Length: 87
Image 1 (cartoon, helix red, strand yellow):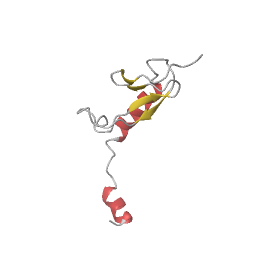
Image 2 (cartoon, rainbow, N blue to C red):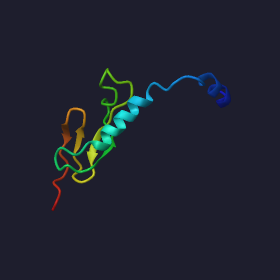
Image 3 (cartoon, one colour):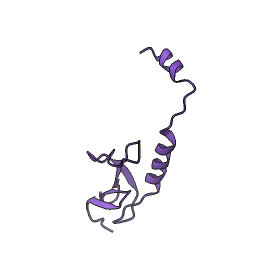
Image 4 (tube, rainbow, N blue to C red):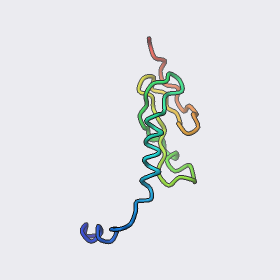
């Protein structure tokens, strides 16, 4: 489809997913590792992205940048323990 035509067709419509996406991004930024309280980055886990029927945007798991722990920030269920940080 021609990009100019596509832009004209969606002109005036509001992106309904953007507020929910922004809320999830803020939630992920505030989340900390349940094991060591380190900062985390988003991680893809197959079958998890659309597991919640109440959300239209894909959800993510988080992986700790300190201890490599993988967890679901929505339920705080640890999926992989990762490594014990050396102090």
